[in-house]
Length: 167
Image (tube, rainbow, N blue to C red; front, side, top):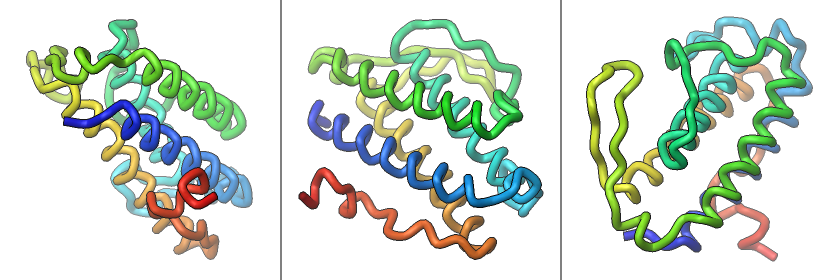
């Protein structure tokens, strides 16, 4: 079982890493961000879009709010500045949602219908929450590799480097 403190730490880490990666990505031209570099979602921009889309999808599952998408590769925002703004907005929404998560929520079940395979699914709530944060880390790792290929070093990306834990 996980704690609310753990969730707050993961949300802080996610926000911190997103801010760092968007700062690094702002050094690139739009063409560089959108160039197909062979990643699963092709480009840095495509991967950033997927991360935002997936976070909103999971958040909607946790909160019961409606979020409709056609595919997991759908491009939500073509403009990088708009994508950056919406990333910050969603990170804030995740933090607010976590503030309201109870111990009872964490011991419950999450029921939803999948996107890639539209069948009913059921998981322990805590497991789905951890999956959301793990998914973020996975794709941010891809982005850091792509940035390194383009000559931009994002610096330390480990959870242990989270500034709030090192003050």
